[in-house]
Every structure is written in C-alpha cells, then in structure tokens.
Amino acid sequence: MAAGAAQTLATERLQPLGLSPRAWGVLSTLTESGPLPQIELAIATATDRTAMVYLLDELEERALVERVRNPEDRRSFLIHLTQAGAELQRQAAAALAKQTDALLKPLDAAERRQLVDLLARVADHWEGLTTGGSDPPAARPAQALKALDHLAVAAEPARARPPRRRRPPRAR
View (cartoon, rainbow, N blue to C red):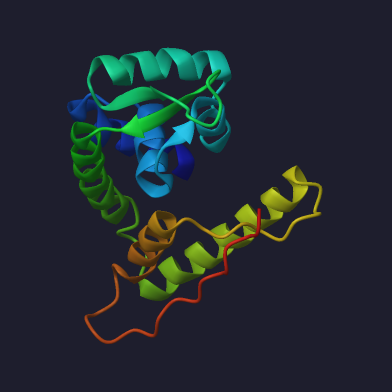
C-alpha cells in the first residue's frame, strides 16, 4: 500500500515535468555518477537493455542526454547528461522532496529515522542476496544519502545534528 502511494505521488510530481520514474532514474544516475556506458546505465537503473535504448532515444530527442562515442571502446557509447537534463533533474528532485514530506507526514522524526534504518537494512540484505553475499554492501550514492537524511530529519525541530555515518566506497 505504501509503495503504491509513493509511486502514485512520484508519478504525479514527475508527469508535469514530462518524466517517467525510469527517466528520472536515468537522469539521477547520470547526475550522481557522471557519463556511463549505455550498458552500465541499464544495469545501474535495473532497466532492460532494449527498453533503455527507447528511453535514451526519448531523452536524447528532448536534449536531456547525449550519446557520445566511448573513446575507450568505439563499439559503445557514453551517455552524458546535458545542461538541460541536469536542470530538469534538479527540478524533479525538488518536486520529489515535497512528495516525500507529504507521504511521511504522519511519522515523527524518530519514526522517520527508524524507517530509514530499516530500509537500509533491507537494501543491504537484498544486495547481499543478489551478489551472492561475496561483496560487502556498496556505498550509498551521495544523492541517496542526502535524500535519506532529508527523509529522516524533515520532521525534527531545527537543531544541530550529528553527521551521518557513511560507508567507504567499495573497491572495484
């Protein structure tokens, strides 16, 4: 039920900007990571390769991303976020932050922090299952950490907060 509500609210916030949740995922991933080969972008966003081609065609047509021949592998393309894509991503992030506050309004600060902690544990467990448990959980992208921190503290009264613990990046 909560996931459905979150999806509905996200779609309501993204639709006026002409974005789908998947398109938002592509723009956000490129914002966080910088240019990526198309296949890595598909993997990072859990998008089927064929669907990624169509999605990138649409985003490229709107001048939000551009495909650039990969200098390290001429058979592939690097997907770059354009200035217009970066601006639209910022607008969408602001709209989604408002949506998060609306969705979590019934939770106080302690409940929000507990929710963040529980979701992080579930994500770590899922990552362990999907990687065979061989690798330690990956570092959370900075944007995700910022969003989770906002989620957890949005209901707190204004006061100094201790810094969040961050995991060191996983060696590749």
